[in-house]
Image (cartoon, rainbow, N blue to C red; front, top):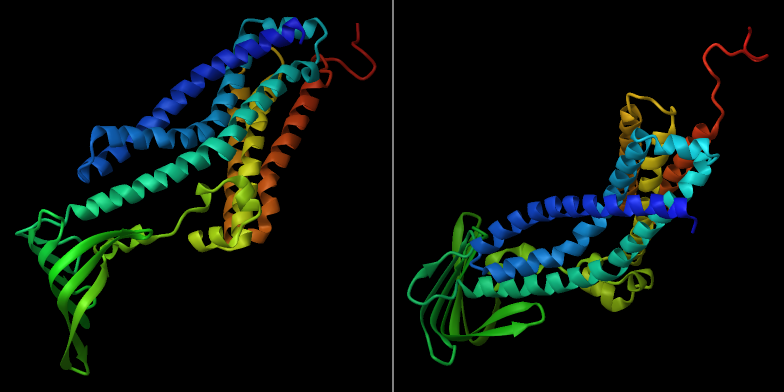
Length: 378
């Protein structure tokens, strides 16, 4: 690589490291504060909060890196222009197309980083985060199993346990489920056990009775059922939202491109949904070189000015916003209809065409003011 390319690339990488660190810190702290409040309210320790924030870090970095690449190229190009280095390079015969080569290498390098994150680290972190959230939900459920006092895990549920034996058995259990006013159920049992299953903790009631009070046509009907063994899902006492299936984003890209029955059953989604998620990951790294090239090519328009290139910076930001707007619109359209996944690559195509147009405009020869087609009159 020529020395001039190494110089420009070194400048961009240095600025990229600075902007990436700042943006990731701001984004991460914002997410950590909300996690801190939620987890501490559930009685979790600071180590659990730190673990959760670390598991969200790969996702934060993958989102921030393209923006950091844009900020680095825009600021770096502005500084090169302000210190007349860009003018000197162009005066030495380097065209905008030639100057864009190290920027393209820089953008592709950032794109490789994003690829590693979205196809490797982010799914692994999300899978581990889902497992830890399930464990935390079970621990939160266990907090309501307190002897000697009435507990209200959620609206319509009343729970009472007389005592807990040394071997873990719950003695003299009472549960009132009044979430449906027209069908209220009261469970009582002499003993109960907490059993962990793949879908969450379950209460196994032993030697008990279920009383169902129904309201039909203005009349009340009471049905009594005695049982020797009955299972009750504790997860329903917390929230039905805790019983959702796995997320498509927890799986690897290859499994999403070739979804099997196990994946579809765990997520409750269809094969087109899985493939749409995979294509969304494949399209995401393409935005990194596009963002870097927009930040560079836009600032070359207009030539040198002793007032700086802040007007071009404004147009560069607008260009990045347009690409991001298309990205969101394409994601929404593909989310409504997974068959429209080719739209996910439209923002990258639009951004690439915009960069080519900007470089072509920057490479066009400029006429001096007052010149005519036949030359300057004397």
